[in-house]
Length: 592
Image (tube, rainbow, N blue to C red; front, side, top):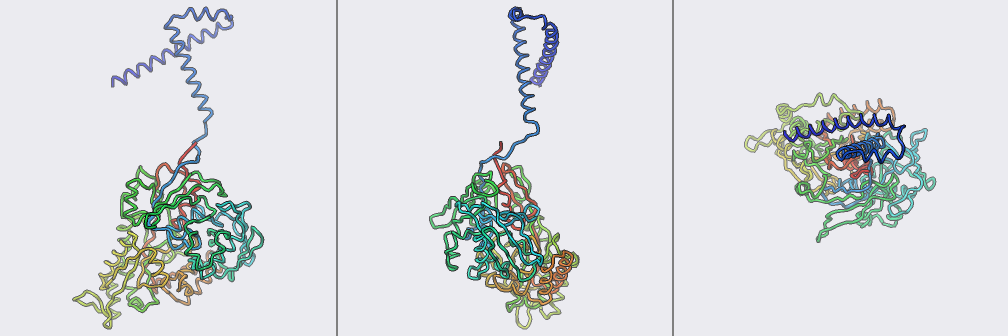
């Protein structure tokens, strides 16, 4: 307190001194016209020592104050601007196999890396609007709505300096269309004819009108001069899948492996040839961890800056913190349990599916697994999307009593000794398969507990994400499958529910077949009238709710935590977690 009093006293004395100096200076200025050059030395000599000190102090005050005024005027209206420099280190669960946009869709790790290495023809911005990327503008559409013309920007370059041409686009699409390459994108391009017009222009002609087709141009392009000589049986095995040459904002520079060949990390440098301008960040490093536990340990040990996968089961990573900036990003994605209707098991009995629907408590999953960072899903079109049917959510409820009544009427008799229902000597028993990600395992455990309350026996099968994709989904080798399905920017459900998509690489996982649904989905994609599409999709959802090929659970937000020092991230809604990198060329750490 005494120190504060002394400082205040000194400050007040300084103000008093300045006032007296200004008064004396004003009087002196009035005499200035009478002074000659010879008077100045005599005036200085007439000052006492204390007066000279005061004069010097006043001069210093004027100089410093003037400096601040000049600096303030010069910097008025300006702020720190992004500058080059800095590195981002992120942890991912799993191993990369295909840093290749043609094959990457079945793995989140591959999708993340491909999104950074490869630019797209067109892309989504933060508001899910389509904007040009490699293309000069959005595709132009013919009068009959069947032909799309795409023109590339001039002077585009691959990361090795070679020019990007329409031959590269043609090669990429033809590769996807060829079943021998086993691309998960085949269904999107199967009924499309591609024609090269010149070195920068191509035509894409559809057999029938598709209102949602334009979103397929949000596609990474492969360089033909790198991949063109490979045969289909070499495509998946090529080292090029881990040594890509793309056209995106970052270039793969170094791959580190352990002694047993497991990938430890991949480092990428800013692409000097990137068409939208060199990124501000100098480099990115992705470290690959075996499981979520190892990921969390690495994060807590500060070996990584951010997580590509958020463990919702760790509350500390969801709650806001001064240590990081939290981005809560919407996703057009729902999680569901899909029933395999192509397989002869108890789930082909509609009464069983109805009972399981009624025994499902979605809110318990949302609270216990996602800590409230999700909303309930009741059908294949989530709330907020074109075609969402609010009537379904209003009718959906949980009732163990109603579920038991349905099973009783269906002749599923409860065995009092085992607690399992039986019909014609066949127990109400089936396998529930999911991958080993913590969120899915915890969700599956809750569902198992809920369904066993009505007399079902659930065998939980947990496999790796790769095995889930390659065996369970591709071969349709499951009874019930817990899986998240991303509907994309346009809610067109054709690829997920049309009967032509029941076999791989189609995405109709349940093997659901319904002639009326096929007609509704085909009509909806053949018109650009939003109101008509909305009507067809609402009717489609009514049928799905009646037939119950799946039990829809929830739609979670994507929570992305990054260090405070990383700025320039502007995300609200993305179609896939890998799209969190859509503006990574604008992220920055350094300023000027």
